[in-house]
Image (spheres, one colour):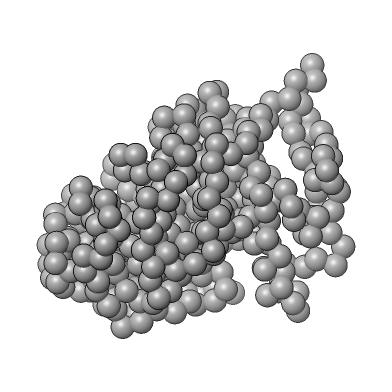
Length: 400
């Protein structure tokens, strides 16, 4: 059953067994670094470094053990992409419309490549396209509707592909094929050597969101591609033919890139406030977790717990087989600002509306909770993620 506990004015919901044992363990940060902006970027771990971007326009490299800043690189816009790393360079983009390559060890600029400009579709268009690396090339999309392939060592353009709308989704590469979605609801399969189109899949669309925008990313598993859309659907598509395998219509946007584990697929929803586990073969729901807010970031599986962040500022670890919450971590923003959005009953407080006349202020208040749009990264018994309270966090994970 669910028990409500109030500590220092903050309502905690914990699962209690019939014998009174608390299942949801809580933990504190091992370290936390306060950046100057919201952190939507997902950390990348390379050797002893944690590399992540911030809305304060900087890319940071931290010592993963203690959070010491090893270097930072400043751009002219918010760094809301996640970095890609090889043995020598880190690649990332900024809202200044530029793709950057900086030295992995020093943070010094190697080169930059400028697109025809960035823009956001709306206030919920939080992410930028995160670059992917393969065959000596960097593949990166932009709001100018272009997917670029540039040389990793020089930044020289090799080819580009023109989509039909904004590309903020992250490409996925499987062999010689790249898969990328755009804001016109197209999923493209391209040959990575010359950018030639292999096939296009179009999302169904919805009465209110007819384009069926693909906002974040896709996952390839064996012969199937999985992704969500703003048309409320999650899709499974044959990677060879571009034909649909199955789709399920949720009650809201599916922004988070699906995570595959064994025969299961995990993803979060937007306004239906759920975290979902499906059978990946047939698309049947196995379990769901009801949440107070949206999930946009993707999940990571550690020790048979699936960890994901929520807009309420809590990172949760859930049993992959049962959906029972086993572990919770609260951001500073959640601890300090919970009462600005939620009442003591765990529901939105009186007068708070997600999409009322003052929806911009509502969205601002949500981010004061330390919303977690970042996808966590795991290393040994540690997990790293960013938050809208500006923090980059390192916390211990638990065993199942």
